[in-house]
Image (tube, rainbow, N blue to C red; front, side, top):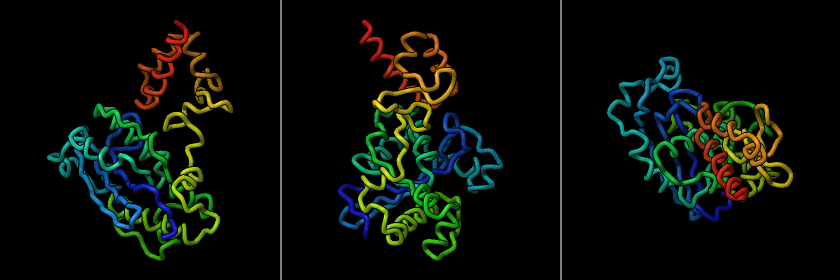
Length: 257
């Protein structure tokens, strides 16, 4: 195996009620945990999202309200999920844009203090689009020479992502063989949150990447327009983004005291 591990890496995939990171919920979570010694473990959770799964979404992943009615809610498995992720790096397919941000939201709702920013992230989709732009089924066919059966089932997608990344490492000599290098290769482009709404400037200070204050430092904006902080907290923004802004707001108030 060309991937050099210094700690475990968790490949994971989510099936959800929809694509809104701020309001949609997880209905299935599957992971494949690979250890430095080559051993691995896998598990799939079905989760009651405590909201209706739209029929159009069920048509994609095949999971209906009846399928998850008697399943645990996310808060009931949150500690187990954190235990799986603690001290690990994380990999997925298009996970930097969707799965990781949505998982971060669920952890906050569950009252967990585990911050996913402690992890390094590898996104096999970004490697794919930088080298052979297409989707997971095409990636699986291209790199592994197989058709992806049961696409949009979390387990099938997780296992396919694992196989795709291993095949990518064998195919592209330019790819780094460490998690640190791959995380940089598929990075979040130095965003402070998971949606890219708060990014870092050249000096490593958080700036807004949206709205009327785009390009301005968050701490400066919050000091001169405290009402903007209230508007952000009441708005339908991801909880993790609000957590980042609240930290900066509190720090700026302390410095101004």
